[in-house]
Length: 121
Image (cartoon, rainbow, N blue to C red):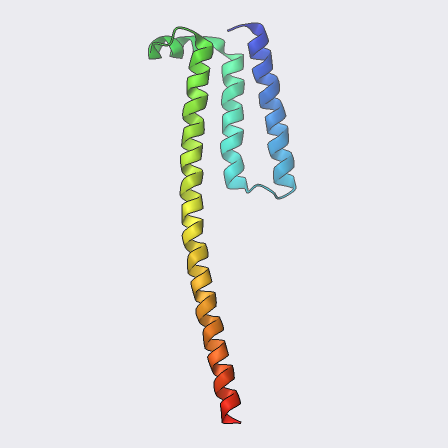
């Protein structure tokens, strides 16, 4: 891996850590989700500081060019994150649907009580 690529990886990882910390401080990202991004940044830093690890792993995986190995790892990580976020969205959609149904039932019952009280007068 070239020195330029390693420096770029370090700079990007450090900037990303700073960004994640700022977003956490502004309370726009929950801590549980920020840990994933901080771990990814740490992994990028590790690969930048220890290029022999990347070269060794790319050789084991049968990837000739270490930078292609990094792209492959990035793609896999992004697929995992996308799948996880899809699961979260699906769960939240079900929760929203349940809350809408409960709110509608409560509103209906409230209207019924109101109408019932008005007819008794």
